[in-house]
Length: 454
Image (cartoon, rainbow, N blue to C red; front, side):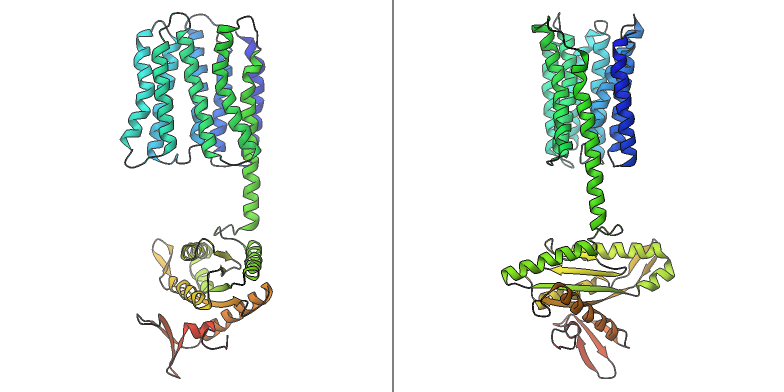
């Protein structure tokens, strides 16, 4: 047995256990895929313990070890694909893993199966190209064509050198492994374009890992007298592992920061982030002498939804309302959940009282349609809206919130009187009629645009 691999096997096993512990405490959509990849690296070193066995046993160990190294690379690559839920991405992963594993297996039993090297090399470049062309009209990404080009170049290089008598098969095998891990470097660079330590270390580690398969043959051919310990060639693996652990920790920190500033149910900014954004918006309005509008939206009959259908249905209603409100406003505006059934909207310049009223009316109209609470039932709710404009209605954040809140509660109080609401197509989009006076009270009235009672 090749006992020289035992220290590396032990080190990688302990590293995989540490990675498993971190990923268990900080689970992400990719942590499970990464852990599987590191288990493949453990299998790679475990198989290489039996590499020196004679005959079929040694050949089988080489095939398992190299295939595990190939699959680890593709798992790392697959985890970094931003569109891996696409069916064509699964096909691409399948053909790449299959073609590379097939070539490695044929190379390991060379020269018995040397006749199969040429079709296997053609398959390396042709299979990803065929998948990309098959789905090019439905799904087309720059990263995919970069991978196709990379494997086309690999196929040509392998065809040119694999039949060289002295070192052709070994150079071809190193070229395959280089392409796998250089592909990992490209995918992580594409998927983690952020200036963090974890991203930098992981990308640099994969680049160094791929260059091992270039530097090792060069040293063996041109500097045979120079001996480099195997631990040096394995160092990039440990660098990548450390980088991935840092990425998991960075994602967990970012997730915790997101939870601290956002509502866990709707994903909208919570009261804390809302107050920060409102303070910033008012400061910008003061500096530029412009206006900022604040809308307080309180859902009507939400308690009845909870009492009738249960709190799960209430949660679904809140999520639907959040989605509708977010889609209605501009990206520069802010929709926040500031209470159980209360939402707040910040409208920044350019805005006016009339525009803010139009937005408030549209938010109310969004809730005219019933909302699904389960596949068979819907709930009808409404909303009461209060609008306050900075600096006309208030000169500081607290006073602005109080003004909008008072107008919202006044609107809700008036809406609870026996009135009949109808929708018109004319210049007044929504009117509320009080039968006892027969005088139309417009939503603009309720918001305090025409009358000053709110």
